[in-house]
Amino acid sequence: MDGGQYLRTLARILCTQVSEPANISCCGFAGDKGLTCPELTDSALASLPVQIPATATFGVSNNRSCELGLSKAAGMTYSHIMYLLDQQSDPKPRISATVL
Image (cartoon, rainbow, N blue to C red):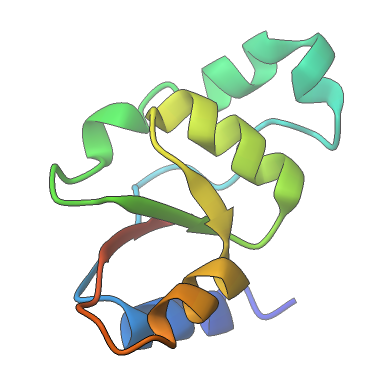
């Protein structure tokens, strides 16, 4: 409802580097439609892999079905922002994340 501003702000607080791929406004997973029509997600996220910095180790989203599609397309794990918050609440070095 806030256009992702809180997600971006929290990611910037928790990570040393945050990147947001350009021209991707939707993962195309469409609830569970990505399970039966993977070409929707493949098309929507075709430009994602080349936009992820080599230093990124973690992808952040706020929707479980989007996490599935993003993880498959990116070749790295996307998880809910709360997992990142939990991970970073331990005193250890921050990680690099890609936010969508």
